[in-house]
Image: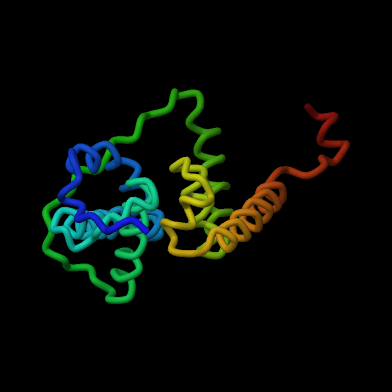
Length: 184
């Protein structure tokens, strides 16, 4: 087993945090039910844990997996305390690129359907799917970030994909009435 290394001893820690900031903010939002203000507070607290050295990096996983685990557990602590008034400096939120004008309606409908379907999934299924698809972690790395076994993560991943597929299929328009097809 590798000895724990204080994170502040890692070379280019600030550069690593900066490089992962946008993905970290997205993960924090996911852990905070999409609330950008709560996500900013959770991310700030997570960064404080990392930079103060209160979190130790053992090297058993990638830096991103380790950081996402800290963000997840910080979000859980935040929810338990119901903290809303933490005196942290504002964090600049990453800008989201604007899609082409002709794609706005299709994208909005797709995103709304996906968000709605994801919102119905149990928390662990939602988390593992977010980590694997949004942040491109392996299921093993997602398990590490979530603090669960790889087997548990695989079960939630498989069940989440199946349930999401079924929910999105239900949202698709079904067979059309033949009279409405003739009107086109």
